[in-house]
Amino acid sequence: MEDTDIVHPERLSLLSGIEEGFRTPAWYGVNLLTSIRRIKAQEASWRIADDHPNIWELVVHCAYWKYVIWRKITGAKRSSFTLKGSDWFPRPLPELSTSELEKAWKSDITLLTEWHEKLVAAVSEITASELQEQNRAFYLRGVAQHDAYHVGQIQQIRRLYRTMNA
Image (cartoon, rainbow, N blue to C red; front, side, top):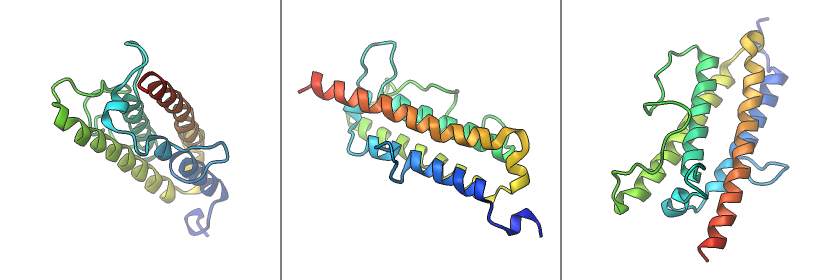
């Protein structure tokens, strides 16, 4: 029997962790999708200081790292990410009008969700032996931790935004 024919407990555990960090209830509180629910583009664009990322940039950053881990799992070529660049993407784009901001913000939330779905699909198909190759399990645990880390930042930025804009 090949390991593709059985349910692999480590893969299920990794998938559970990835989903917990992103959309399902987490023991530690808010997941990534919940942390950005009901945020409007204006709040997502606000930053504590010029040299700190805003919520919007954190969202695109998380999408990018889901892509990086997806690439490590699938062996896909570089430059297949939806946006040009890497890691940090300035948001909002300066050329956007006020009326375009909300649409662009929602588009980047969709980008995050799409890369999450691609990653989950890739992990769902990985075999037990492939999971052990090239530190894949290590990276997959890391992507869940990465989401949780940035949720903490998003929550802090939201609190500061509401305090300073009350």
